Length: 464
Image 1 (cartoon, rainbow, N blue to C red):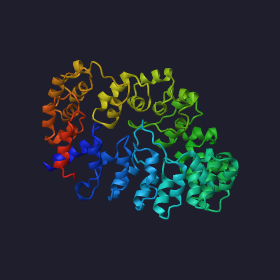
Image 2: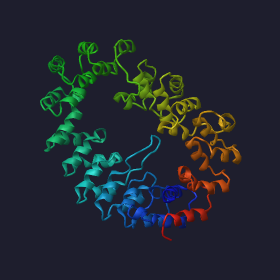
Image 3: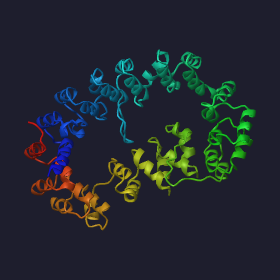
Image 4: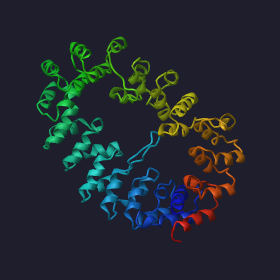
């Protein structure tokens, strides 16, 4: 029974109908004698000032860490942890949320707060901030003149946002690592800089991939068969050496050649390249052009599956290219459309769901705004496959009697989905609170009365 109520407690923590008085009681809890309140209570959207105050003052730093990394908290709310006594909390705040869904946008901390964290006396906090993927471009660019070489290295990653004089200063920086990183950004336009980088073993792979190569250096690395995949991606590689690498015995080298942006479609498809079944298609020149109509057209209309997969990750596909990729026979193309495009066709969403039911990608397809709802009960309530019976619960016309029947389904996922539905009759909802595999869903059901939520808190030992 203890395990049941522990699961139910997490369900209550996520319940959208949880009243403030119970939320405050839950937030003050130190679960299992030291783990803090349930994470789902902290990771709620729209927390009131009173709830935020309880979290900020919680004696357990784990609660404050959870809040620091919440995708649902406002940046100004999280920023109030900048002076937290725990370095672990401040480091969590500095880095920000670790995991993002493709359709989730994380609002960055204000630049002034980032500046304070960068001056923190604990190295772990400074390092976490510089590793964060959530810095604003303006703040990242401002680091170009910072006294810490690690901060200046982070500024190099915002190269395109830097004015010419800042770029020049970083390229001549006193710190060798800053200088090397900056030079790697500049070497695409300077053969002399590329030649210098090729004398540094730590710089060779990236210099070969992006630098302006002299003929002699290019021939030397081809002859030595060193870093050939990086070399095959280099935009300045002479055409005859591209042709030579297109026939290389190494599969990875030929694949890299096949993805070069300047190749005609006929030349591209003449390369004998391998494609892994589940390769995402993370092609740099397409990724950098996901909002560029010309890049998207070239990639989406290519016979190369990795280019089409890369194009399908763009939320900016125009209607004609969206229609084209929706008809693609490559399943990864459909998966990317379902995850990334706001107008992904219903047929694509259903295809992804039917093929990947039970996975993260299938769940993302069902949370897409265009995923169908009407008519699903009549169509799927008696389907032999539980993946489809689960869809019947999504139908707004599904009757309470059907929801109750599905709460007893042999498939646990169907039972869980039905148990969390507000149409489940109250007697059955209360019954499911005591059933281990659906207790969480019952407790998260917004139709659960406040008195029952309070009972869950009492049974789990949450103080009044």
